[in-house]
Length: 342
Image 1 (cartoon, rainbow, N blue to C red):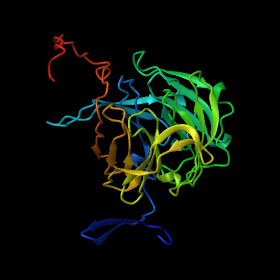
Image 2: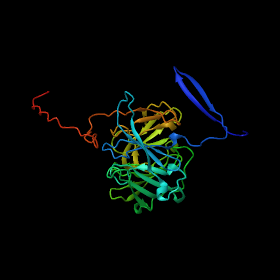
Image 3: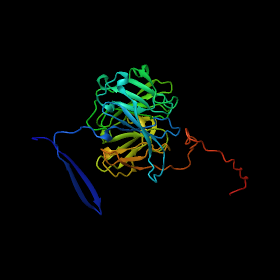
Image 4: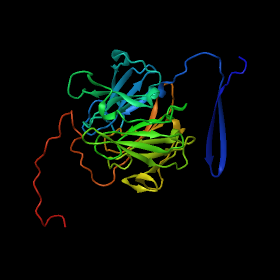
C-alpha cells in the first residue's frame, strides 16, 4: 500500500544510568477499525454510591454507554472481579434524537449536586455550548432513568470560544470538574497550551465567569487532567508525562489572585509513578476515599489494567461507606473513663 503510514511505539527504560529503547511496529494494511476499546473509557459515580467511588463506563463511538458497577474490593482473590456484571445501553443518544460525532463531547459529572454523575453534552459547532444535560435518577428509581434538561437556561451564556478539539483522546477543549467543593461540576475551557478559563457552577445552579484560572505552565492540555488528589473535594491539575506516565500535581488552593489567574495553585510536585504511557493513565477514585487513584490500562484492545489505590493520610470520616449495602451495626462499646489510656 503506497505512502501509507505505519504505527511505531518507542518504549524507553532506564537502569543504572543506562538507557534502552524497544521499538514496536504495526504495519498499516489499509483495513480494520479506527477505534480502540480503551478510547471510550470513563469513570464516574453512576450508581450513586454514598462514598462517591467511581464506576466504569464505556462510551461507544456513537455515544451509547455500557456500565459496570464498582464492587469496591480492595483485594482480588479467588477469581473475584472488581466490577459487577455489565449493564448495556444505560444511555443511548438516539433515544433522544441525538447523533454523536465525537464522544469526547460527552461528559460524565455531577451537574445538580446530588452526588451522582449526570450526562452533559457540549456542541463544538456552538462554541462548545452545553446543549443538553441528562440528570441521573438511577439511585432513586429502578433501572436507568434520565431527566432530560434540553438547552439548560443556567448555561446559556457559557462558551469555550476560539478553541477546538485536538486529535488525541485526552486532547479536547472542554473539561468538567468541581473546583470549589460545592458538589456541582464547573465548566473548564482549555487552550492547547494549557491556558484555562472557567465558569463556576454555584449552589443556586447559576454559572459565574471566573475568566482565567490557570496560565500556561509548559505542558499542553493533552497531558493535563482534573481530579481531586488530596481529598479536599476540589479538583487539582494532574500533569502526566506522555512517555513514562509519571505525574505531577498542581494542588488547588482555591480562589484568589494569582498573577492574572483567579485561582491559586501550588508548584507542581511528584505524586504518581507511572508504569505505562501517559495516554493510558487514568485517575478515578475507585475505593471511595475521595482521592484519585492510579489506573493504568495495559491493553487498549482488551482493557486490562493495573491499579494503585491512593492511601489516606490521617483519620477520615467513612460513615457513608456502607451506603446501599448492609449497614455497619453499632457494637455499643462502653466509653472508657477519662483517666484511661494516658
